Image 1 (cartoon, rainbow, N blue to C red):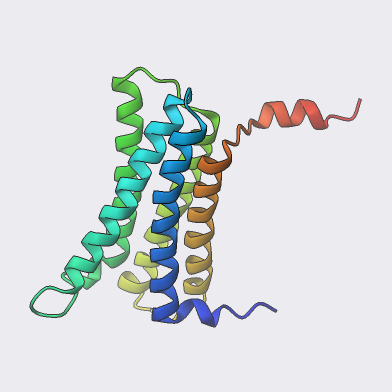
Image 2 (cartoon, one colour; image 1 turned 120 degrees about the horizontal axis):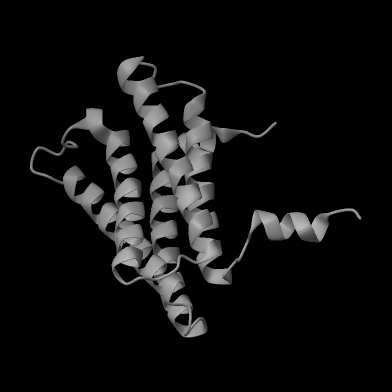
Length: 174
């Protein structure tokens, strides 16, 4: 049985959050260095890196306001859902305005970000609507959000070109 209680520790959560943000910045440089002809990946990692750095900064700024409390704690999970949604929207809009074709990895990244959005919205529902802050889903939420963020970094770093139809054709038994 996996013990998820470590993910409920605030210091560990802060460490993971900062670690993932640093990984996005490192991956930004890696993508620009390795994939010179992949404009879609460059745009995607730029938008995602800026988003993660700014959301990390904005969240920490809100925590250190003079009152010492987070402004609008009832919007904690909605705030993270909004950051993810805005990241997808900005990335998609930039691709539309520059008429870039979205890379297959970026399509999967949109899907992973959508999983994060749904997780944040469900946590908001549990904590704010049902008033159950210690629900079992919190551990699942913590692992899901961090795992999908790491998968997003990996997709950018390793330039995965997953396509379900290609995978199906390769793995077909004939």
